[in-house]
Length: 390
Image 1 (cartoon, rainbow, N blue to C red):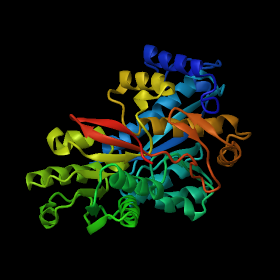
Image 2 (cartoon, rainbow, N blue to C red):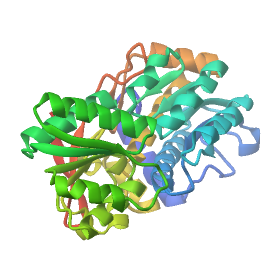
Image 3 (cartoon, one colour):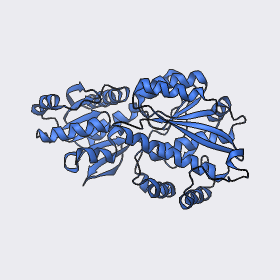
Image 4 (cartoon, rainbow, N blue to C red):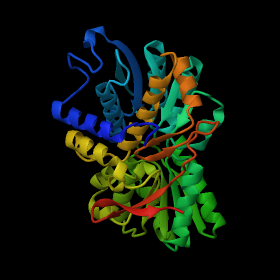
């Protein structure tokens, strides 16, 4: 923890102070002296879907960022300066993501951004940030092609789908004994990329792939596709996509009498899937995730307590937003010049960070060399951590 949150006891105390005082970044006086009016302001962006059918994961993500920023401001680590967040709603739409990116780079006080959530949004937005020389850290976009664009402004905390997909396939083959399966994806950069990676490894392991079909985000009726799948009697249905469509697929499959278990990636690794699909329909569903159970990580205990006291149930991506923000804030703190160029230099020269989600070591492409993948299963209406995927 020393690289990001130097002095863990001080961070825990700061979190407790936030809870006790309800600090929202608007107090009249600030650590280090001065009043809010006299402080210089540095801004960071948090870009994610904050409205619409994927709003919950975006809100969870940005609430983690909010916690990190408020803790940083309360600590007085950057005397005379207050950090503010600009939350940008990209509505999971690539065009809106580009608009959000353009708004962020147009404000000279914005030195970096945490985002975007969806790979299909991160990809076009990353070109905007690169053109402006602004540091971009995504906590959640997992498509491996994002880091192959050669943008020195791009960083990623999450593991990538060329690791997540194959590990999911090996779990299906070795732990679930799957012999034949059907693959569905949502045709997005994330969903199709993950499903393709899963399918390739599954076929290499000798699993028979009965078919692979695409659906469209926002569609509601999947009965024609599921009716086609039912007589094939797959041992598993794999879905590359996000929980809104995943929950509908589950409900409609169960209504048709399809009993095969479902499996997907981090896009369905959320309790919101259970809430939307229902406990009965989602029971037995498996999901890979770019981490484990944060509630069982001792170093995350203070964060989890503070988060749930303030916001309620911990989101699956909240801790990753928190860590990504702490990495950016560390770069802001240590940068010789509090400019976009200075922050980017600091990001590129600090070798590693240790956060509550684990160690983060960026390679030359900006990818995290820690590629841990966990397995979760819906059991008794709860998303339960099973263990690491090998």
